[in-house]
Image 1 (cartoon, rainbow, N blue to C red):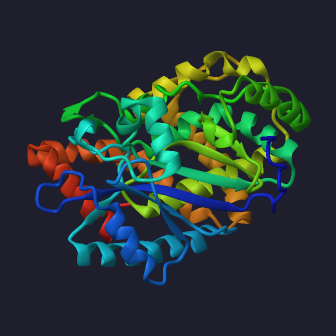
Image 2 (image 1 turned 45 degrees about the vertical axis):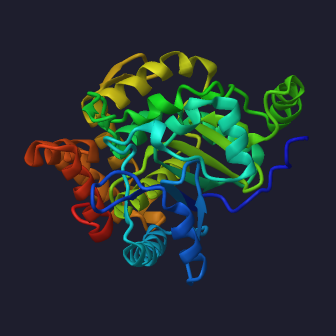
Length: 376
């Protein structure tokens, strides 16, 4: 079917999707309890929305559309309260984190539904291995061409979001040495990676997408697992590289950071995005996944080697007037503490593992962090 028309929305609005882990509080392994939890939540007044995901040990929370960081954070806190209460009633714990540190993919159950079953048939074992957990952030765009401009202008900042959100150092019971191992699972899908370099929506719709549809490979934008993709039905771009943080406070801060970045980029005072920007894209992406804030990235236009930590601190300073205009300075303060002093959530999980001496203790800490929201 043809690509859905781009539904222009208010520029710089934002919304968040969070994929969350469902955990058995007895052994801290994942539990296939999504059907029970979703049923109970359907009987309660629930801000935003909650949906099933690929396997029965995960759910996805969706916020409403917001313009301010404080309002987004307030709704996420309301959602958390309802979910934790429902989980307590069913003896289900809930937590963030980009991966569960010791679950075995072969034990996961595909959620019953046409799309999930179709994906399971198409991708085989990859579907169950896709029991990983990400945060997606939507930013409203006033036009389709604005969406494509932002999508590509953001390419050099993708490592920022990977490092800031990284919370998946362990997989299958071992330390992967990556701060974000989750993205390696996403990269296994054939339509992952980055979007083609096109800045004109008509060319994207009638050229690229029409050709891809004619191949039979794709039917809608849902079939693309790009790091950033346009969502024409919402009138947004969707950033998809973030691990689900351990706290909803960090999740809200990441959304506000993206909102401020987009405001700065729309001033168009920087060189416009170009195809050659992507020459170093995969390398920079790897550095952020592997080393987090300690990564060294290459500036796509100057070829200068940059400390990812220092580049983040510089960008946070640049964004202060934009965050102030958007009422998002507390979000920048939260992220500055992480970059300058505290480290990301991958480091927190590793410290927890060292203190507890086991992967179960990491999950216990993640559950408590999601429930209490501290430390941020």
